[in-house]
Length: 164
Figure (cartoon, rainbow, N blue to C red):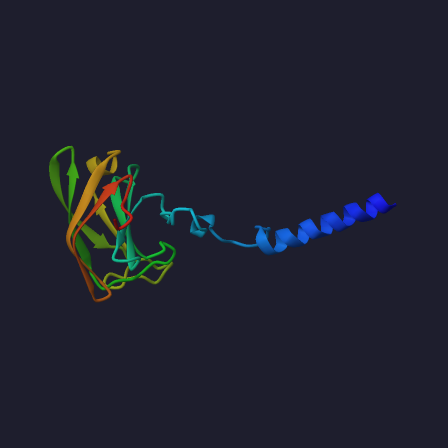
């Protein structure tokens, strides 16, 4: 009987320690923020993320080979929320194997989200040959996002950038 009581006491202590120091179920957090781990963001559409400023914004570049287009999403610094901007279009240049191709991403309106041209976080350009490439880089001479101007922004696909 004594051994059973000792075992129950040990299990209770271990469970309490786990509650205060460990990671239990029923929550939603990312272990990448813990000490000794790299701070990582995940692209919501499986594309490449480009960090702007010190976690001010993220730009996601997501090619859609089936649709023959490349999508661009403006996100917050954690890549969790969409940020609508007033631009009707965003100019860029794609570089693929040493060759340059000008792009004009057009704002995408959506009844589902209420986004309109001039108030959108989603932009798209029809570029079938680029959308099928496994590696390319997109450069923006200038991006204005909510009053902040970012110059000479390059985002390599598929690896993206972390603002380094």
